[in-house]
Length: 163
Image (cartoon, rainbow, N blue to C red; front, side, top):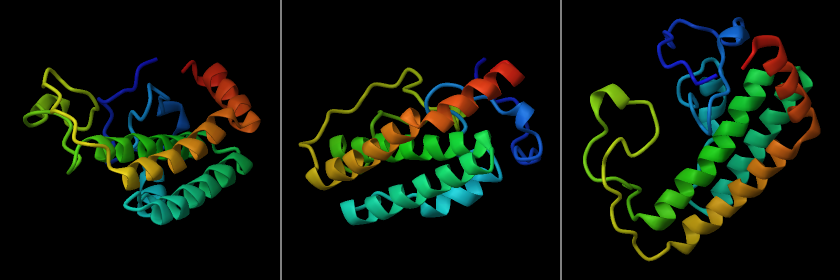
């Protein structure tokens, strides 16, 4: 099932109401789903490889703690933050300043990823520091996706809630 952007994300506690959570595609909802956003976002950084390593390790630790508590929504959100660490660091590696598309995000698409009809800006020469930060997050993201407990809990969640 697709991610439901029509929910009132300011009012829903997804720890109490996991049935409302949708895995969606990629990073959908990563900056919306509470209380997980508030728990994970303060640790999310990729400015340098050292900062990225500390961030990815901390977020992966949260991922493991959520799995241990059988909190699939939290684990999936941590997985999304690891994925976002990779994609955002890659964006900055390819586009100095991090701006990938020309023009503003349309008002009706705010909070959703994608080009939304905008042209991609030309790529700059690759920033090796950001590329290394991206590689650090990619390793942890791949590790999270391949984690057998994560895969089992994801299958159980989708069986239970049809998502």
